[in-house]
Image 1 (tube, rainbow, N blue to C red):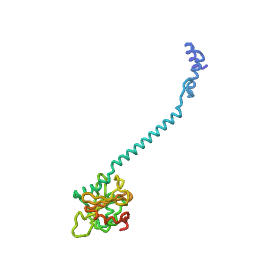
Image 2: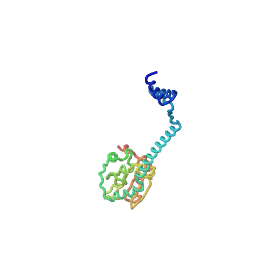
Image 3: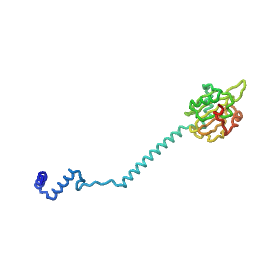
Image 4: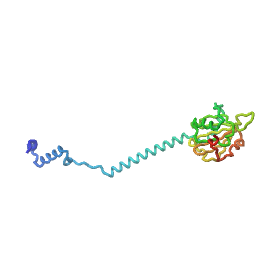
Length: 235
């Protein structure tokens, strides 16, 4: 018998502990020293597989809810930032009523297109064929209640005396920036406070022709309905 075993037995003999219990204590000590299985009487309860699966499902559901909430928030914010297309016409009237400073527009329509694109206009927008022969007057960027539209102005007629009412204006924007924007190349007509408007869309761009004159002054420039001449063809 080893010295340690002898000392332990004497200790417990003095306490009137049975030899069997001493052996169990010694056995548990050996197991602990050797890094073996858990001590006798100690039990480790495995995490139930069904509960683990429930936790994984709960975590997956929580992640899906967070993704959905993020997308919903983005969509709501986007919708709130869009401008009702009905506000375009009154904003055009307001803009020209404030005597805005306009940039001189180049007569070359390709150069005019480049000027507008350089300032943010859709790259694939094009000037209607009916406006190509007209004399360019001015161009600008118009803030449309927080969204940008790109303006070019032309003289409707070539005559000695001309005023603001003889101009025709083209505004181009991104259809996604507006609520209820026209969805086709068929122009939607509108008259407001002595102005005439026609709006349509093609691809991601939305177009508006406007003139401070009765509708019959605008009608000849809508003969191209549904058919555009790309600016590159004029180069």
